[in-house]
Length: 382
Length: 230
Image (cartoon, rainbow over the protein chains, first blue to last red):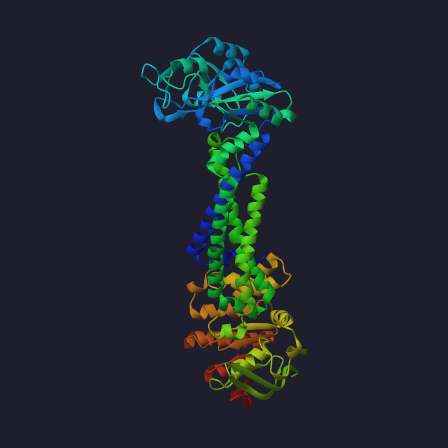
């Protein structure tokens, strides 16, 4: 501790250079925290997903959809407990920038397949009997100030109606809590499928995909195969996956997040090694006469080496921790967008470990160089 | 006066590129405890090399250097560092203060190597700055001080750990006459009142006159060693 002022003074000897180096470390670790946070969050979401739900989609492409007539056939597959379906609506309120995660659903089965959605039986009943009914997550209702009984002029950017308009006015009949499911990606605004399907000008009689709850999770692959077998060689063949695999395959459409995150972070940290190494090297080179004075006063080579390493550690660890904390703060700030995603304690620990490693690798060469300083030569200005 | 420094048949050679230069030729010298010795001589005569050997900054190619009974030529680099911290106070021509630290922090540097507590260190630093007349400049950075004041800070740094020997390499070489006189009187006071042994390399005969003994080197040989007339 008594050497702290010496380390601190050395660090701030060239204030502008130290601040710029620190900023580059902060940004790199912010990036690390954000990407690893997303990565870790995705893994957590996948792990929390249910294995007793199957997703049935078109074998060709999910956007192709499947006939509504498959509903009864899927229900009849042994081991299937319940079936519901979702159709993406592409909704917005007043302006396309106010987009809403609207899905056309079957209120009779939706809440049976997703029993952890918190909503009263009265609201579900109201949805079933109100053709233009709508249920939304509490967060959306709060954002727009909507309450039960309000009429919303919902619009769509996809499904033009038979009368040529794009307006689907709905009545709010319920407000639900979907926090048990991943709030960032789970459908949060429901309208009735029948209301939607009858009005739209095209795509009638189709759904985006079916969600199937099954009796025994251990039989998931077997039931999935049975469903796909039932529609084999039809004009609409299916692909059935567990919820976990389905979510992962959707993410795969964006790309291998893990590989992308690791590649970006790896490149950033590799570049950072040179920035920090260069800063430390310059800093030590400029101070060779000062280190010679310290050695003259009785500071051993080991002590001078330790002082330089402490500078590198202070630089990297303080800036790295700042970047990681900023990443955590950013996730808290964007909670509504990313849901429960956040850099875990493990990511924070890994980040601090990398910061220490960065300090060691960038600090060691100049620190080692300081041990080679000849006092006589340095004091003589050679 | 018992010798605190004893150099016997010292030879020192340096290798620069392909050239090997013998700087000191079988030099022998004794300096008594409490002496104030000035070392004079032309450039390249081996003054600073001699000073470096006495201070334990360098080791002889052959011969023996004993200071305070310790054979410096036998000590490892690490042990010489520890020995310097305990026994030697350094004063340089260009002060060699750390520019990012205040005067007080510069003076504190040798004390960081001791087991003193922070409060004890502060007390010693204050006393050292008081002694050199800079108590009111403790928080000033070196660039905020004149040359003479910086050299006083350098002397305070040299004396704060209470070493028995002061090694001064042209301590007045960068100062005007008035400031130089102040520094020399300070060194005289440390020698006379506190019994410190002072070895000072200088080109300035007026500075050398403040010493109790003057040594002249030429081409690596001791030419004259004379005590000043009282």
